[in-house]
Image 1: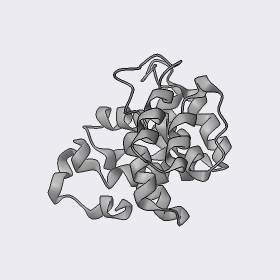
Image 2: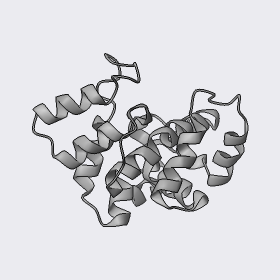
Image 3: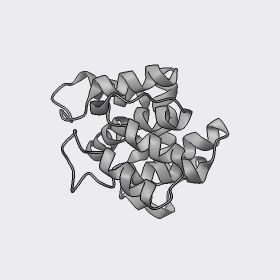
Image 4: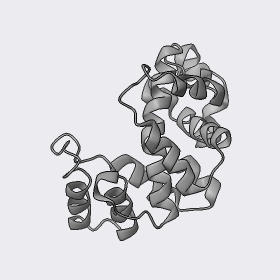
Length: 169
């Protein structure tokens, strides 16, 4: 989210916060009827800005809430995609730097791979955001590479690897 915010000239800290907190209620409220609404209540009660609260509420399709801001649309678009890209990285030696848009597209076609990832939500998110698939995949991969080491997905490159992750900082 931070990488995409920087690319769009948006508030990097706010977008990063939305990305970190959007599923804060999931462990206690995994039921789609409650998930994200409870999280939004918690955030609102703690004085989190309305734009972030609204994006958190709207990232769950179950509620049918409109995603009106670029933040809300981006959060929705990356939610499932980040999980999918993580799964691709895991089969590539836990290395986000080895993931390409081509490898993501190939794995998306394999319905048995990461079968719990909602591919329709990935597509709908990109459509709502109005982005081209390959370019968006590349941007999300680059943003995730910035956190590869913290995510345990730096592969063999680890801390001493190339500066690929610096692009997303």
